[in-house]
Amino acid sequence: MGKIGGFKEYNRADESNLAVAERVSNYNEFTIPVPKDKLKEQGSRCMDCGIPFCHSGCPLGNLIPDFNDMVHQEEWQSALEILQSTNNFPEFTGRLCPAPCEKSCVLGIIKDPVSIENIEKSIIERGFAEGWIKPQPPKTRTGKTVAVIGSGPAGLAAAQQLNRAGHTVTVFERDNAIGGLLRYGIPNFKLEKGIIDRRVVVLEAEGITFKTNVNVGVNFSVEELNQFDSIVLCGGATERRSLPTKGIESKGVVQAMDFLTQQTKVLYGESIPDQVKATGKDVIVIGGGDTGSDCIGTSNRHGAKSVTNFEILPKPPVGRSESTPWPFWPLQLKTSSSHEEGCDRNWLINTKEFISNDKGELTGLKTVEVQWKMTPGQRPELIEKEGSEKIWPCDLALLALGFTGPEKTLSEQLGIETDMRSNYKAHNYQTNVPHIFTAGDMRRGQSLIVWAISEGREAAREVDLFLMGSTNLPTKGKGDLPSL
Image (cartoon, rainbow, N blue to C red):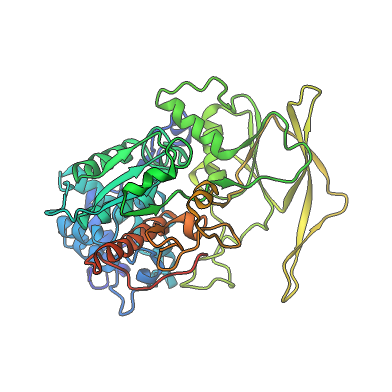
C-alpha cells in the first residue's frame, strides 16, 4: 500500500487551470499538472482497503491501489505496466472520464477521495515522455482477419486486443481521421488531437491497418466484409435526439455535435463555408450534460454575446444526495470548467417554441417553468407552472440532448437484431449473426468512455474465443453485462 496513514498526512491535490481570460483565447488544453514531488504524496493517500470499492466503481476494473502504491514508491514504470494491463488508453480516460472510481473511494466517506484520475493521467504522460510506450506487435499471426467498424474508444480497444492475439485487424472509419467522437465530438480544450495521433502511430506500428473515409454500407458495401473471418461493430450511438417543438426548423437551431465537429475541423485546416459560429450572438444551450458544457466552452471561445443553459431536470444538490449514498454514483451538482468561463444556468425549464422572423431566422425562445410530479409505481409527470412563460432573446440554439441509439444502416443491411431502444442485440457481445460482434455505445447505448474501452476489450476476447476455440486475452470476469 501507500504510506501508512498517508491519507491523514496529505490533502488531495488536483491539477489547476489557467485563468479564464487566458484559456478562452484559444482551444488548447489548459490544465496545470501537479508538481512531480506532490504526485508521490497523492499516491501515498491510498489506503489499500481490504475491499477496494474503486475496483467495482471502475468499469475497466483498473488495479488502482496497485498503481497508487507504485507511484508512492516512485516505481513509475511498474505503475505504467499495471495501469496498461487493464486500460488500453489511460491518456484518454485520464482527461475525459468522470472518475466513478473516485466516487466509490473508501477515503471519500470521511475526506476528499484519492485523486485517482490525475494519478492515472500522470502515469501515462510520463510513460510517453520517457519513451516507455513502445509498439508491441504480436510475435506470431493466426491467419485470421477481423474488421472493426468504427474507430472510437471501443473500436480502438477491440482492435488493439485482437491484434495482440495475433489476428490481422483492419479498422474502418467513415470520417477523414481516426478517433470517432474522441476526434470530432470532444473539443480540443479537453483533448488535443495530437494525443489521439500519437496513439494511432503506436497502433499502426503494432500492425493494425486503418482505413478512413470508408462508410460501411454506404461507400463500402457490406458484401465486401465477407473477406473477413469476423466483424466487430463499434459505430457508437450517433442518432441525435431532437425536440418535437414548434419552430424547430428555424435557421439557428443546431445540433450540438454539428457545432462541435465543425469547430474542430476548422482548427485542423478544413474549410467549412457555412460554419455555425456563436460570435456576437445570444446563445442558448439546451441540455445540461457534458456535451452541453462543451458547447458552452466553445461558444465562449467564439466570443458569444451571452451564453445561457437550460436543463429540464431539477438542480442537483451541491453535496451527495441521500438517494445516492457512497459508493454509488452521486446525484450531485457538477460545475465544469466551461461553466466557470461564463454561463447563466437554469433548471426546470422547458422550451415551448423557437421564434423566428419572416426570413426563418431564430430570434428567441419561448419557455415555461416546470415541476416533476413523482408518484410511486408510475413514470414521473412533467407539470407546467402556470403563468411562467418567458421569451428569451436567442440567435443560436444548440441542442445537446444526447443520443437515441445507433444508426440503422448496418443493422438493416447485415440483418442484426436490435432491442426496443434500437441498440444492437448481443449475447457475450455476439449478435444473431454468429461471426459478427458488437461493443460500446452501439450495444449498450450512450455511455462513458471507460465503458466503451471495457466493452471493446471484452468483445475482443469473445471474438478471439470464436475464432480460435480458446483465448488468452484478459477479462474482468464479470460476464455479459446488460445494456444500460
